[in-house]
Amino acid sequence: MSTLPFWQNLAPDEDLSAPYTDRFRVRFATHRLDLPLRVLPDDQQAVSSLLVNQASFRVMDALSENLAEIARSLAPDLIVGMPTLGLVLAATIARACRHERYVPLSTSRKFWYDERLSAPLSSITSPDKTKRLYLDPNLLPLLQVAKRIVIVDDVVSTGVSLEAGVRVLAEAGVSPCAALCVMTQSECWQGKFSFPVMSCFSSPLFQRSQGGWVEQDGP
Image (cartoon, rainbow, N blue to C red; front, side, top):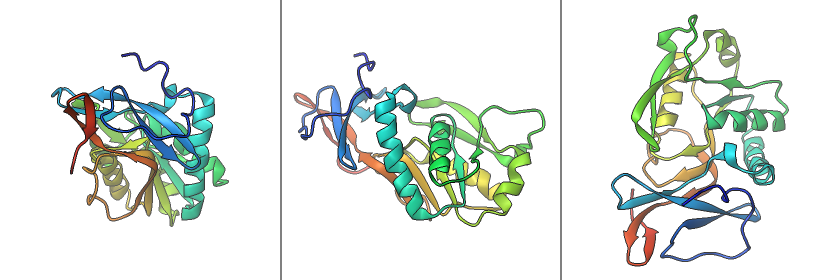
């Protein structure tokens, strides 16, 4: 199934019911959005997918507006962005909070980086590929004067990627007051963080059933 038609338009104002075939409909603010279902390698589970860099500007504007509203309620003085898809969101949120800039984390190591300001990084959609997450040491002064840091990613699923971001910040001597993302996925990430993880919407794991996919109970 091609995902090209997805994330281009907001969905009709009605809910879908299980069993689901090719999509799961989520609600955020006053909107609904259809997400394609992607089958995991075990062929018995699936997740709903969102690639914010492939979304239309109309959909991105709606998501960004919702995220910015949540961010402003947290009164952050610094936004930290997770690569790759969290960076565009972090920039948008920082602007909405009237900040002059944000702090990007990176998976591309420059020669002047300090290996101590890094952590291994993987995700549910690339489980066999572990990279490293880095903080440019030149950005340390921005972190050291910040009192309320919010870390931003596109999706939090297992929590492994966000944990890497928290470890990098800890090496810099700081910790976030909250995390923001467009979607929290499944319950696997819950209980891993000492701060709130806030999102536009949540999506479960799905398991095969007769006629399609149903929400899986538990993580």
